[in-house]
Image (cartoon, rainbow, N blue to C red; front, side):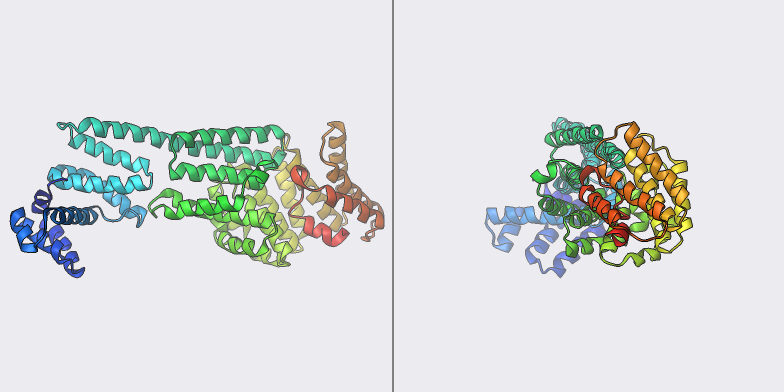
Length: 469
């Protein structure tokens, strides 16, 4: 063990008094006696006799006092990011102005805490200092190796977050296209993150890996959702995040898991649980879309519409101001989803023309050449609104365009769209607002087929049900 006596003798007056006051407050009499004795250069034998201890008990006492002094020097990195940064910024001053024993005690306590939470980037600063401090010691090679090891770990963590970013970009494209090729890409990225985790099983990479796994189960249409217990995976990830110190940047990812929990429970029809996570997520709605590098949080907007419709609370949408929602203007997925969300708010405000104008703006400002799914979603919503406005020519032009594209390009798996087109066509022909039996039959077919990868109009199905079901 590092010479405790030397550390205590070199503590500055303020630090020594703070340690002393803490021991007095905690009534740690033996620790206090040892602290004062070492400060006054009392020998070990005299202290053993004064405290009536054997050699083993005395060693334990010294070890525990050393731990307490370390805690006092390094503080608690769990508290917050500012406290951690403060400690890291202290390192150069400690190394160049304090005796080696004091500086080493400070650094080794930081090392111990940071290792507990796999905080590789911060450990690089600690090991860099320990390496330099032991330049003339046989421990230099040891700390050099640890420094290099955590460079590799830090790069692995950065690479895993880069993979997550790529995954989120692709899942946005998949959401718009439902392309099987993009689904393959998502599973390839899943393999990549699993490889990173196999090399570095840190909590942060495990959290990143779990986000990808959860999104594949909740948002994608594959057999993975049948193989994975999503609820267990969510609970496990919450536990991992809660164990991280508040100073960890990954602690800021909690809102994303609240949203994923809401999406999952909404999907399986567990309204009670969905409501709890909805409330947690909705509070952050104005900044939620700034987290799309962690998960496609913009999907919450459509799910919010669906949830409120199911609860008979769609009027609550009128309390929202979409212009207050901050997002990355280069993120097309968020931009388009926010446009649909804004249009639905106008719809529920009975501002049908405004709702139609917002959807037309989306169509005119964005290229949906490779995204038939979302393009159809927007255009069928627009056609429905035109029918409410009795602008039947505009509605007819839209649905004929969609029909031609499906038939000309032989687009498969969208029989549900053809069913809904028949429903809208009868609306246009009848022009009286009444729903015929033929429309009800076609709509029933649409409802039966509107699922899995070809599911459309999640934000509008409630309104369609009210009219045609």
